Length: 221
Image (tube, rainbow, N blue to C red):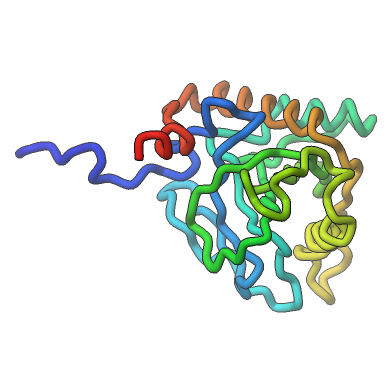
């Protein structure tokens, strides 16, 4: 039986897509959610297909496109950094790809797409005893956000909305307060360090993946 061509199969967004030749300075991000989504979508790790994680029962919508960085993993190195910066010893990685929010003035109507993004900082979020960092980035060449290079340059209202979302979207009335906190808001240099560690955590667990990038794909057009 003739073997089908390799391009006949869609790449797995986590394992089959490169974070980019210039990562972490400039990277490829996979977007799962956009601000208009009334339900929470999440990548099914086994199949690489978006699945419905849960309906948003309460008024909780992420104010920016939100997803993860391919070929990253929140493991021991990410957890160790969180422990060093917070002074806590009992912290472990959450076992997921590194989360990322991408600020843009454009209206993106649906997820399940790749974008080129530039990290500007992040939130050191601790969920129970797990490191659950959120990288904040801007869409490359975005008219409104593209010149931002550091967290202090980001609109305060947007940063506060992101904080509120991540501190509340897992809270369910009547089930007790979930222990989630943002222990630190960090700038671009620390964001790059966190991403590097997550890339090393991924390689330790899964090995090195493909190296093709969104940037190189654009050059070939």
